[in-house]
Image (cartoon, rainbow, N blue to C red; front, side, top):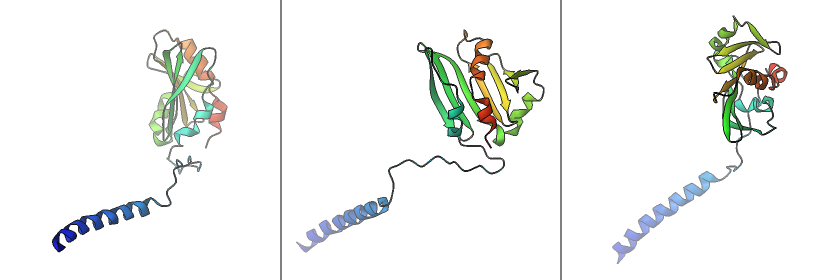
Length: 164
């Protein structure tokens, strides 16, 4: 009978020890998500993606804006109307990729005073404060170049220019 008691006691003690370790290791953890990083990045680092959301246009008149991606140095939203995706709107911090700025060196257009370039056949982008690329890229063939410019002008470009 002593062997049976020992055979049962060892696994039970092991389970109890593991349970205790799990309980103690979870103490002090918060269920709240981490706060957004509001500190300024070091030179060469990009701002957090959630920094840009407040500068996106507001939707209305049947349009909806759905934020689809947010990561360091980048935020993107999908523009839709009547359940049809029309364009992708984005802001990217070129601080981590300075070569992304070079296409603006020969810009022949401006949007609200910022150098603008066509990006492929479906995109229009501006460079704000020699750092932030703001872009509207059509995903629907019927979304015209004029509409891309209108939506680009709806961004708070001066607000983006004030970021550091």
